[in-house]
Image 1 (cartoon, rainbow, N blue to C red):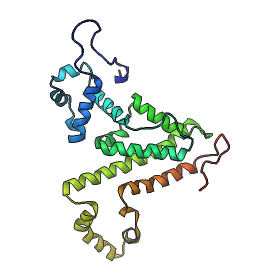
Image 2: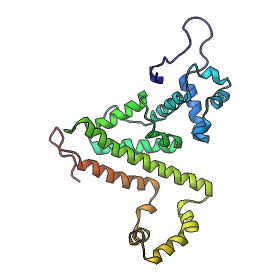
Image 3: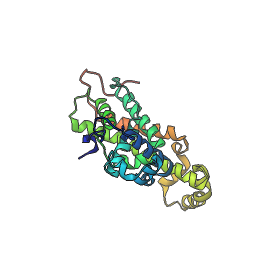
Image 4: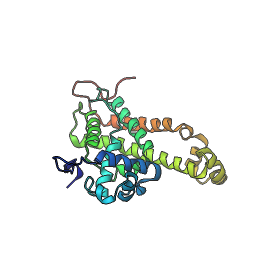
Length: 248
C-alpha cells in the first residue's frame, strides 16, 4: 500500500497522550539530514536519534524507508511555487516551472538524482505535474503528445541541474572553481589535443564556445530556450486560433 493511502495519524482517537510525532516532522528531520550529509545518511535510525526517540516508534508513522523517501521527495517538490493555473503563455509558464524546479534541486541536491528514477504521486508532485501538463492544454494535442513534450523539458532540467550540482560538489572537494580546475588539470592536455589537429570540432569548442563561460543561471537559460524552441516546433495552432510561437 502506497504511503498516500495510509492514514496520516496512526494513533487511535480518544483520551490519553497525544501523538508526539507526525509525518511532516519526521519528513522534515530527514530532509535536514539529507541536505547536510546526503540521502544515505537519512536512515530511520538517524532520524529517530535526532528526534530523541527509537526507530521503531517512527515506523508507526512511516512504515518503511521507501515511504520516507517518497515523503521527502513530495515535500521538497512542495517548495516549487506556482500559480493555481497556467497564465496562458505556455512558454513563460514552462520557463517558470523549469526555473523553480532548478532552485529546489540546488537546495536539495539529493532530490535530482531520484527525480527521474523514482516518480512519486504525492499531492505536491501531482500539483506540479498537473500544472505543467496544463500549460499545453490549449493546443489540439492528445495526452501522449503533451506528456512527451513536457518530458523533454523535465529531462533537460534534471540533467542540467544534476550537472550543475556535480560541478559545485567538485569545487567544494578541490577548493577550485571550474575555471581554476580546467586551467590546473585539463588545460595542458587540451592544448596538446588542439595542437594535434585530430579533433576539429572539439578544437572549435575550445576556441569559439562562449556559453560554457556564462554564469550557471545563464547557461541554464540558454539550454532551456533551445528546449522550448523544440517544444514549439511540435505544437499546432492553439484551439483559440493563436499560433504556437508568439511573434517577437
